[in-house]
Image 1 (tube, rainbow, N blue to C red):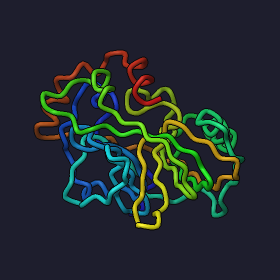
Image 2: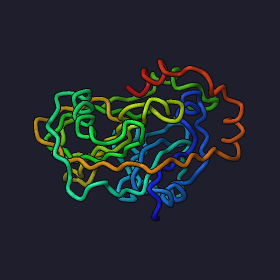
Image 3: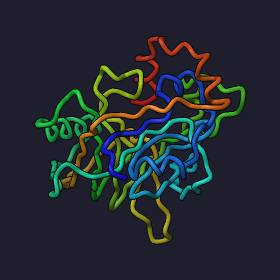
Image 4: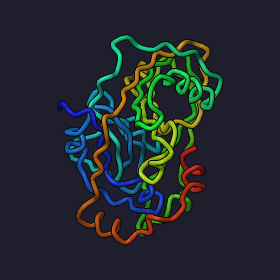
Length: 247
């Protein structure tokens, strides 16, 4: 795996409009990257791919290991190879917006027109994250599914946060700005927790690493997912809906 391109299955616009039909197995997705985020069939949980291991930040709040045979309708991954050997130390943050601002400051020397991948290690953190319950067919747009999301707040000794920063001009492909998922370190019973990051607070310094993508490979869904994709009004303005759903 020598490519430095990000690989994305489908588009955020398609997911927002209700195309939760899976089109790729997790095993197939892993051939394109070792770090990434996404979702599962029926938006049933949040995909967290880290060190080539996939987890589902599920509706129960637990991040459970995922079998390679499970499928995804939407994901973005990259063969993780950070730009710099030494990690970047960024200050703690009192909020998710503060964390995003700290990331922007750390990325000041990188192009604003490129996709960035990020991986962070944080300690003594207060987290809020969410996951959706698996949707029942017929599927509805995400804007009509917000009632089915579960938000979890917890304190964690250690957590890792991964995700991407997409420039605004690619907003139809993925969420502009920093789109982040979180997974905690195993607790005493071996359980991990995580999902789509909604809030963050830690006074401790954060260890971060970034990777600038050389490009992006976009794969259109095939089969039934492709049929649905082809019929969607993907030119619709979904900015407000994305902001409400993704934060």
